[in-house]
Image (cartoon, rainbow, N blue to C red; front, side):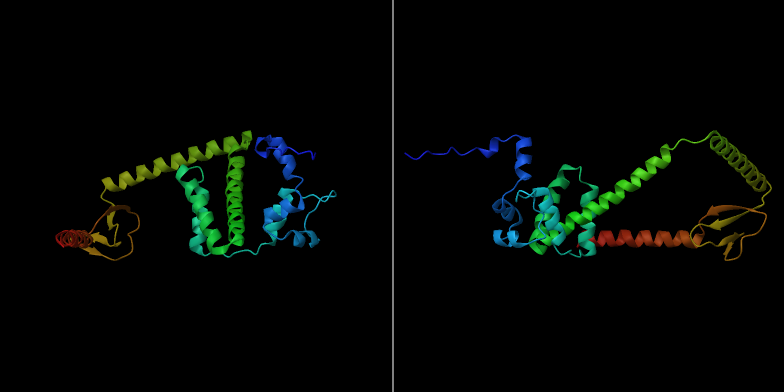
Length: 233
């Protein structure tokens, strides 16, 4: 009577056992993983193969991803990739993330998906590197001389600021000031607003000339009229 062999339930393998299996894939399993013909996989001398003839899944995928042609994404597609990378921690973004991968697969195939991971890896690497450099610079301890120099510079800046404000107050009290329109840059001369160089030895005050103020009112009135017309339509 033939002896029956009981099949092993692979779903009950531990994590370590699963890793061990993936490190020693058969030709059939490796060809399935890459979705290629088993014979072509065997005959390709560039495929990373172990001395025992088995395949390491991680090495196999790394090799396969390099063989895929790079897809040049449009600016719109690349912006979508970067936006997803910026928001990976959000629950709704994870759903969009995998939906976008499916969409890339439909439009570009495996090359598009591989290019997606390549772009997002480079983007996140640059972001992490920038953050790391900023943290290193911010956390770098300062010498006693650097601390004293920084304190001295802050004190000098504060002294100059107070002196400047005191001088501006004196000039204003003595009516040695001029008023300039913040919108058009014209300077007020009594009832007139004119384009001319700023007078020397006077402090600048800012206001809005009558023409610019009226122009702002006209824009507001036109906008309100258009909104009312749209509401009646």
